[in-house]
Amino acid sequence: MDMATIALVDAVLREGGVRRAATRCGRAPSSVSAAVKRFEQAISMPLFRREETALVVTLEARARAVDVEEATGKITAILEGVGRETTAPVPPIGLVALDRFVRIARSGSIRATAKALGLGQPQLTRQMADLERHLGTRLFERSHGGVLCTPTAERIIPLSEALLDIWARLTHASADRFRRDVATWRLGAVMPLGPESEIARMLAALTANWHRARPRQPLFISSTTADELLVGLRSRRFDAALLDVAEIPADCEGRLVSQTPLVLAGPASALSELGGNLPRLLAACPIAVPSVRSGLRREAARFLDDTLDEAERRRITLVEVDSIPVIINLVRQHGYLSVLPQSSLARVHRPPAMIRLGPAYRQSLTLVWPRGAFAAEIGELMISMMKMSAETRPPAESVPDHRPPNA
Image 1: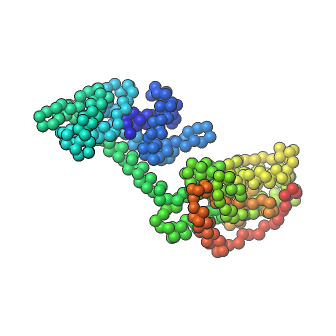
Image 2: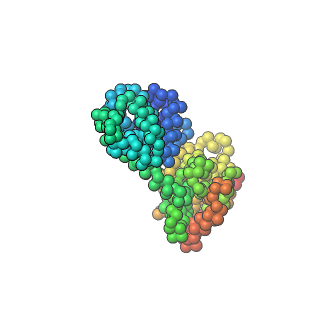
Image 3: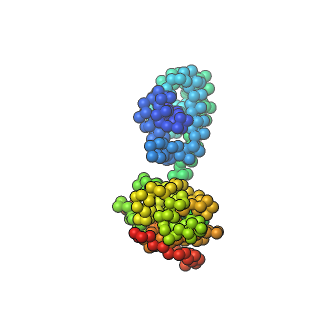
């Protein structure tokens, strides 16, 4: 790692993007992007994630931003300490060279430092000459007993040590994180509909059973949409994913875990009065639907397409909400309709009225993993752990059946 890279990364974090940082620093965007990649590799941590067309700073990067800013402050102080213009580009001085400078300054001998580091004295001498050239000042004067620090060197020694301490803090955190990541199984899952939902129940059972069976191998579970889970699988951010679709992607292996009947949920008065005429019912109330990136949204869209003709579809009102608990509250408290899993709604306090949509419409949960990157026996173990408490859960409350005309 070098000082110029740290300064560029600090600019990227401050500006929130590579191009804005490149403009601020007077550098080519490709140079700034390369600096970000070097930094990410050095600390084993992504600084950005891509969301559609935009780059977003990761939470981990935000947590480290204070250290990066402090490191840049020390770099600026070092350059001021040697009399360089702070408006000039930061020289590409490696932190290894800076560490060796501090070691020589503290020992008073290039020869002794080279021996302690297992280096040749000429190699270390050349490295210090390069450091002086980049800083534009002399750091050492030769003496009979070794070397003496110049006043400039004396000024920047504590600043250099502080910079090296900050970098050690950053790399130590990343090393700890890397060690945890190597030992951790990472499972991505679609977002549970609430604490009583089938997904939440299965993930809780998996977590508890996994911890008992494999206490030395942590399990990390993260929830997001089906589309983002597939991206995470392909980038190896997840070792496996629990998707709310029945299909197994072509580049993955997996197995269907469960299927839950779907219902049309809404206000009891509307379902009682109009339940026999679904087109009128769907036009009478706004319909809350989840994100298009979810498997549940695909099932809801399929139900609407099967039930309504083109003219009827134009009369309905869809409200997209990327939070299932919010959708449930819209249904329970504000007169909305929605297509949701029966088992999840039946367990909530004061559930809404429901019409079962028939066997053609189900929420499917499928565990998948990349081909050749995840042992099939571990996948089967996860599935068995998810289902371990299946027999003890209470039965779902019965609801009236309704088969749409084209189901």
